[in-house]
Image 1 (tube, one colour):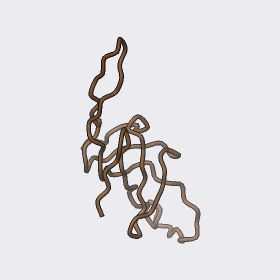
Image 2 (image 1 turned 120 degrees about the vertical axis):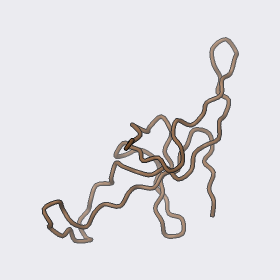
Image 3 (image 1 turned 90 degrees about the vertical axis):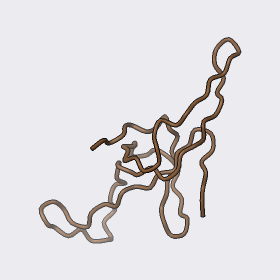
Image 4 (image 1 turned 135 degrees about the vertical axis):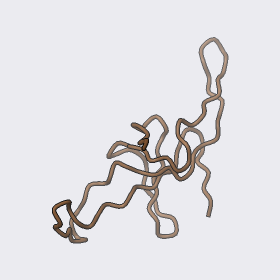
Length: 101
């Protein structure tokens, strides 16, 4: 199934949280873990026209690309499941930064 975000939304998938701590302690599956703040961009919106002052418009392009690793706020976006995978729709102005290697 292919999903195309509309307007200024970006489809992201959060990176999996490890099952062990850096010290080697195993975290049981029943522990309520915070949502990670690093995600991978899966789909982006198409450029669209946005009103500007003086009756003009400008084209707003997405600031990230598919496959980018990004940082996002802990409570940003709307969660949902498709084919047993968790995804989140986030507005592109809620993205905090792109992680560059």
